[in-house]
Image 1 (cartoon, rainbow, N blue to C red):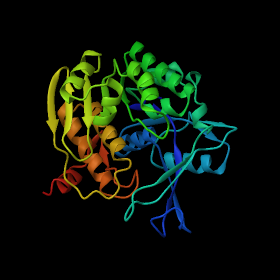
Image 2: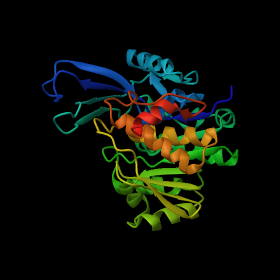
Image 3: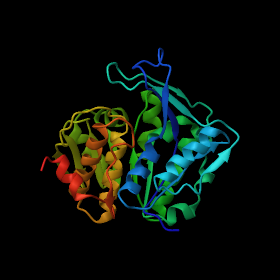
Image 4: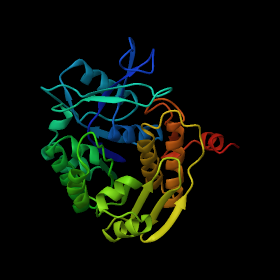
Length: 316
């Protein structure tokens, strides 16, 4: 089966305190499924494209319910593996009246055992776009090897790819992240990262200088985000900026993944690069304006957001 997107990585069952804004005092929790790569897959599916997602899930109830969640969003999970390990989880508070506090149960999880042999050449050759992130690199050494293998294979097969630096400082030190991510940040169609992440990986502070270097490393589109502030990007050495739509931010978690999904979908639909980046900004803003990684992801057809949603965001 041919797909528009193939991505892989770690999914988590997220338990969110629902009766108080503190995990310590909560008696009730809501459960949802999330994860950087699967969030991108859901975004493409919502926008009317075919997305396929691979991960390893435990032979447990969490693994079963998460697979059902993802499949219910229209994402193909037929390649997923069930293994004799536990499915990872995250516990957090909503962050409505207090800072977001997050705890993880992921070391040694099923997803952390992912290995290069899991990603067959046929998975990549049968898709239009491959997406990977630095989180998969951070969860285990085998995860990092899997990302390297997949990106190299995509380049070899001339399949367009994207890489999100996505540094999680709870998973590894900045030095460790730089050592692994710097060699991977090259020869992709789209490289995405926050301003601080680019600074960690490339050891420089000037955005224009960093993005120019990234283009020279074979990354056609280099995008540097900074929350709701101006987004900087460079296309084959041409530097520009975009101001994201203004929304009341409720929960920024997952908004970056929605942005990435919107951009990839736009590019696959035939939009100009700038048009795709603007679409991604709308997707990210919508997710940030609601609670939950998937709640605000917009719908669309053939990779393009429904016009009524665009007009609503723009206040028309």
